Each structure stands twice: as structure tokens, then as C-alpha cells.
View 1 (cartoon, one colour):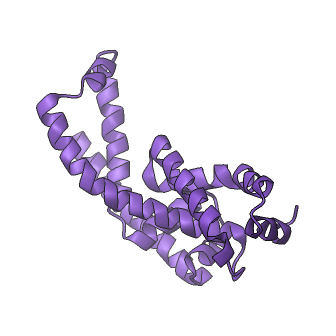
View 2 (cartoon, rainbow, N blue to C red; view 1 turned 180 degrees about the vertical axis):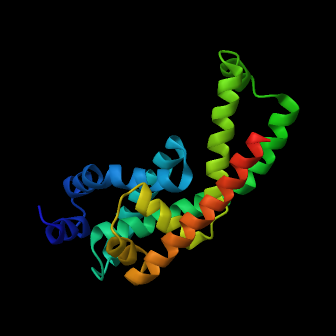
Length: 189
């Protein structure tokens, strides 16, 4: 089924069209959210929210862009909202964990505590470096590295020129390199 037909069927409320939409784009939506959130369960939650939003707002879709581009935009917006909400929740969770102790983490780290700790620290450093990027750089980087979109496709999703995308990605890579270089230099000390 071509995209135009799918959109028309979605607008008319056909359940089979919605099922096809989810089957066709679910992996893309989850991967995009994963690139922003770095957590599979959270990415799947965001994906579910994306498809619920599409279900309720498909009648407002104007076809100014492709359905795929529209889904990317919704996914990015939902992921950014999730990050903002999570920052608030994480503050209180960390306080609770500090006072109560996280028993599951302690049990898992007993298998090989040194390796487990190193892996967590490396992952945390990478995640922290990505989180420190300005929002546009983070979005462009995630779409490039996790979704493997071309500069042109990223430009369509972010509503930017190809040269702006190139510039964003260059700055994102430079910023990540600086942050990770500092982290790894400090490890060697």
C-alpha cells in the first residue's frame, strides 16, 4: 500500500491501516527514541505514546512532509518531553536509592564488580556527554548515528538546510570528542 492510501485509510479510521502503520514504522520509532533515551523500556513507552498521538491526530496531518518525517518529529518531541520529565523524577529516585540502596544492582555487580563498574562508568560518560549536547545537536546526532539518516533526511525532519545539518553534526562530534577525551584522560590518572 502506498503512503497516500495508508494516510487516507488512517483518516477514515480503518483498524487494519493503523496496524500496518505500527508494523511498518514501529522499529524506526523505537530506534529513534532509543537514540535519544538510551533505554529500551523507555523507548518502547515513548513509541507507544507516539502511535497513540498519531491515532488521535492523523486527521490533522496535512501531508506537508512524508508520514515518515512526521513520525520522526513526533518521536523526537515525545523523547525530549520524556527526558525533561525524567530529570525531575530521577532527582527523587536517586535520593531514595541513596537511602534505601538498590539491591538488584548490588547483586548483579557481585559477579564481576570491577568490570561491571567500569562498563557502567563508560556508559554513563557517553550518556552524560550526549546529554550535555545542545538539543539540536543531540537530535541531529541521534538521527545520524542511531537511525542512519542522510543529511537531507535529517534536514527534512528538523526543518533545516543540509548545510545546517552538516554544521550541527560537526559541532556535536567535536563536543562529544572534547567531553570524552577529558573523561578518558581522567581515567588514566
